[in-house]
Structures are given as structure tokens and as C-alpha cells.
Image (cartoon, rainbow, N blue to C red; front, side, top):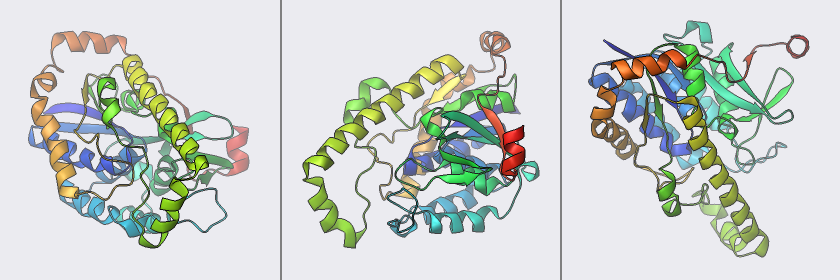
Length: 313
């Protein structure tokens, strides 16, 4: 059996392609020994680590790919969209499973917005960790855990290679990045197209013509470019054995998409990368891995931590 660990990057609905990658890798005889995920990668990673089959994961991602899951937020939290229905769907899927009950090691990352520190979730309730890692700043509400305020882990760790290596030292790391190489960035859509919510469309269309909205669009595109470059730099620094990039670049964060199409795209990148994947167990790669020592990329936190205890540690 060919043992590997996965680092699954963020990317909104593009993350459905992760399911196709996992399915194709399993079909090729690879055995996934650990998964690290950020944002959308955290959702898929948690589902697989809990013991779900890829068929079950397809059903879950199909339900999540629904405009009704992400509705306008009317809560006091600073966000455009709420996650109440999303959390209910994930609770139905994961239940109250704890990290130590998972079938394989899994970890996900989030960023504590007040201290600008990366945190790593590897203990406690898995659902709470998932809700923290998917909290795209300004779009979804932040997650409060242990006296901290967490947002999307992709801010500092878009493709968590270092965490995957820490979870499974000395085995090949396959990184799945949901953005294309820098030369193709010009063809990507805005990170967030207006959600397809009928009763808000006239308001959104009016707002998009305002000067403030145009300025905000320039700002978000600039931040998105920075995030993509951070992903490239982190992968150069953390050195996965292989980087897989499914062809999903034309899809925005919250687009309504064909679940099956995205899964096929994930499967296709595995087929297209057979040569590179076949080299990860060679002597050269083994020697390189000896020098890539596992280092925890952030501070560990238990999702069930008491705020006072957590601050004392």
C-alpha cells in the first residue's frame, strides 16, 4: 500500500474537487494516513477522517452546494452571510465526534483575529474546529472558542502542508491547491460573486454601481492576490512532494456549481499527474523528506477548552 498524507487547501465551493482527488487516489491504490485541511479543505478532511466513504461525502457536498445554505446574516455578528443551516448540515454529518474518535489523524487551522496567530485544532469537538476554519472574514461570522475569535485559516496557511507533515512524519505529502499557477491568475473571477439570492439581487445590483462598492472590489481583488501569492510562498517553503491543482479557476467562492462536475475535475488532476505521483516514493524524494522535519505551524488548541485554562497555558 502506498501511504500518503494530504494537505487540502481552501477555496469555497471549489473544495468539492477535493472529494474527487481523494476518490481517484484511493482508486490508484494510495492509502491516506492523515489529512490537514484549511477552510473548504477542513470540511472535506473532517468528513473523510470521520470514516465517511467518498459516496457519502458526495451526498454531503451536494447538500452544501445549495443557495439556501448561505443566507443573509441578520445576527449581530460582523458578516454578510450566516452559517446556521451550514452548521446544522455539518452536525447531521459529523455529530459530536471528537478528534480522538477519528479514523485517521486530522487537523485544521484557523487564525485568531485579535492576536494574528495561527492555531491548530487537533483535539476536542471536530465540528467546532470546522466552523472556525471556514469563517471567511467579513463573509461568514467568526467562531468564538476558548475566549478567542477565530476566522478562516487560509489567511495565514492556505494549503496546510506543514500541519500534514506534523500529523504524519516521513511519508509523502500531497498538496491540493484550488488556485492555478500565477500565470493564470488574470483569468480568475472575483473571489466572491454576489450570492444568487433572488430577493437581494436588485439591491446588490444597485450597490455594485456605487463608487464605494467599486473601491471595495479593488480592495478585495488586491487582498485575494496577496492570498494567492502567500499560498505559493508557503508551498515553496513547506515543500510538499506533489502539488495537485484541479481545473477550477473560473469558479468563485460561493458559485452554484455542478457537484459531479467538480468531483470529476478532482479525479482528472490525479489522472493527469500519474507521473509526478509515481515519483514520490523514489530515493530522491525519500532523501529530501529526511531534511523536512515536522514542525507544528501554530499553537494547538482544544475546542472544548475553558477560556481561563486556555489563557493560563
